[in-house]
Image (tube, rainbow, N blue to C red; front, side):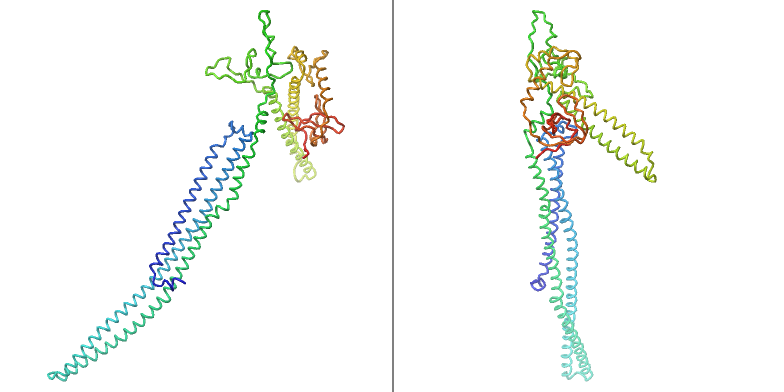
Length: 552
């Protein structure tokens, strides 16, 4: 079935149908454009939303990203930003693959339809012109035949008229013959025009118009097929990005499952743990006996301990230390907090935070030193190449860089040694504070009467020569008891020394570069790892000095 055969007489219907099809394509293109605008606006709003809730660089929220619940929220924002990108990709692909393609194809269909309709109109006009010629010849034949009939009747009447002369009769007969001859010619012309018209009409209805209608049918079917492909692309465009969108949603789910409340609590402790002791009991000050008030100021501090919260905050030590500060709109001298001066050795920080900052500084210096070492080795190799192949370069030109690198390495080594000494000092103080929690009260009271300005020895006791300290014996006895009760712990891994470590302070162990040791206890966040040699000797070493491989 085709339009040329079954719809040969429905030109107007075919014209309206093809026009309606083109209008549907235009309508669908507009629909997809509006859908792309919705997707673009949605993506834009999502990006604005994620930007609004993303923490600014250096703000308080960015500092809290070490907690898993804060980091997970940032992960969700990043996933939503990627999700917005996929919505933009959907809009872009729909615009390119559907709107632009269909618009271009629609223009081609309009031109093709216009051509076919123009051909139909030409064929129609040609048939109408032939029909007009046929009608004209027909009317002429009719008119001439009537005139010939009248001339024949007049000749016959004249011939019967007794009063008519012979000349009149001859003239009438000639006139009748002439009219009859003209009528015959018009008849023949009319017959020829009729034959021509019938031929053209047959050509018009059985060949020309069916061919045009079939072309229009083919055009419309191609339009429908192209439009159907556009319908499919409407879903395929979004289906192609669904795996990525699914990954974005999986990332949001993963961000939720990555939240660990216990780790967040531990992170908060590691970040803000000061290492201070809790305030001790206040001494009774009996003013009736004339006791010097200043003698009770040592209730919160003992010999060898770092500055406590009262000293760091600049509070009056004669007053109790309160956990919850009392807020007041009126600012008095007593409420003014004097912030400590920032020092290079981080002495203004609490013990625990000081050790962490020193360890972090050591790690940074170690990385810089390693870079300088690598650069020095590269320069030495390049100098050796230049010496062997002078045409490649002058070895003397590398001397300034080599000297500068050597100076940098020496400076970094000095800084490394300096910070190591500060870290060792901070570790001793921390150890002494931990031990005070387990010492008898008489040992603590004995140490509280010592001079606060006396220096410490590596084992945490006073280093004044010629004055033995009884607390040293207490420490030794306590440590001996602890070592007797301690059982040999199985190693949890191995480590390889990257640098030499002297192990001069108490509790540490010497280590040579390249030496392999067994790991007994991991780094607890203080920058030290407990290791054991093959002979059974144990001690602590800096974590940054070794490469650790733990057993699974």
